[in-house]
Amino acid sequence: MAAERYTVKHETRYAYTAPVSQSWQLARLTPRMLPWQRVVAHSLTIDPRPDERRDEFDCFGNMVTHFGLHGAHRVLSVRMECMVEVSERPAVHVADAMPSGALQAPTQTQSQMQMQVEPPQAWGMQSQMQGGAGVQQQWQQADPAHALPGQTIAAAATPSLAGWEAVREAVRRHPQVDGLAPARMSEPTPLVPLSEGARVYALASFARGRPWFDAVFDLMRRIHADFEFQPGATTVSTSVDEVLWQRSGVCQDFAHLMLACLRGLGLPARYVSGYLLTDPPPGMLRLMGVDASHAWVAAYSPQHGWVEFDPTNNQLADTRYITLAWGADFADVVPLRGVILGGGEQRMSVEVSVIPG
Image 1 (spheres, rainbow, N blue to C red):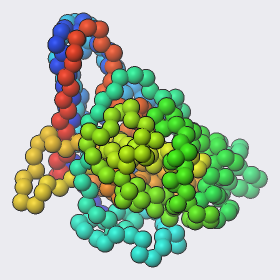
Image 2 (image 1 turned 90 degrees about the vertical axis):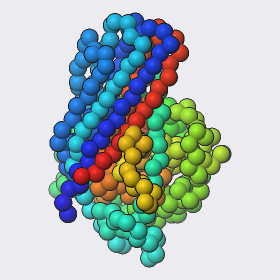
Image 3 (image 1 turned 135 degrees about the horizontal axis):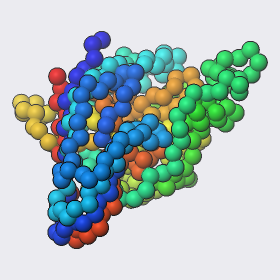
């Protein structure tokens, strides 16, 4: 299948009631280069022009632009524009794992597994935050020295037991696999701490011996069915337990909830941010600036690798999903955050457009 091409425009604008004399910012606004995603063109325009600027990779492999403004200003505009090609993600072979009738009826498109899913909806994630990022780990390949005699790395990591429990035990026995990334993504974080409520909620999907993919897919389905998308119901500081109690939130909340469920059972999963192509209502033209950032989850097993689940839309990530960054939780992938001196009160606005073709 040919790659899908998209133009993405993402502009964040801060307006201050008093002059800002100093501003130091971090921007994670460069889409990742991945086996299934190619960045054809990219630009990041900052106004006023920064006095210092540099690009470097963080410990997750996300490109981070550091910039500073040392002159008085009342407005800060950061505009990203890129052209990206997205191909099918690696196929996941789950014919033996999925029960008959577990998938939804087809609508407009299909995922990389030829699984029939419903079309995505425009769930916004426009929140920004100030503060520090979480602890991060360098991504590397597994060390062959840790494999058993006569065993490959893949064999050393592949569960010999049946069911999702084997994934947990494999990661515990071989934490060095994938440069410790799966093991690190099994741990709690400030935004996704251990939650007994989330663990109990997850257990309904994780019956003893149930195949890993079957269980994770069912957890995604239940979150989509049990929780209502409600903009404004939460903030970036809303906890997983609060989301469980009120049964509502946005894509960021549902991703954090799914992470808490999986990590509560010792299963690795990471937070993924990016964009999702959505369709305008029937008979309406596509409008500029009305799309939004999106968040979903990538869960790991030695057999399948990292598989991307979207609990907001109840589907696997496909060619409509554009990956911007990933980390342990939202704090690791905030599109723009920083520290300012002065400024008084501030007003932030965000406009996002995802244009196919």
